[in-house]
Image (cartoon, rainbow, N blue to C red; front, side, top):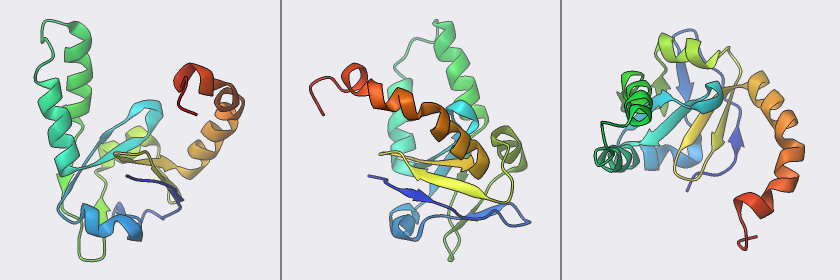
Length: 143
């Protein structure tokens, strides 16, 4: 389970340090791909394989399945973090997410998300009121 927020910097080669607390868990490999709201998703390889398997049962006759699959898989990059726990974010993914030097890496349960730090701050500010009222709709009977 991935939790918390981290503030790594992107270096001039497009490399980013993964949060130290998750490096062992991610050492076997990750898949980085386009996420929603112009962020990047970082999945452990095993989790991405699970998603791939689940999506393989979806009907390819459904346009929404084809559309989502194309974006998810065409933008994906599989990587093994280096010995220092860094991954290289391809320029196309950096452009998609509007990443500058300062980034935010957030834990999202089964994945990490990478955001431009200003975009993350803006998103949080916009969603604060929605979050306060969403518990009943999103998590009825859980919280």
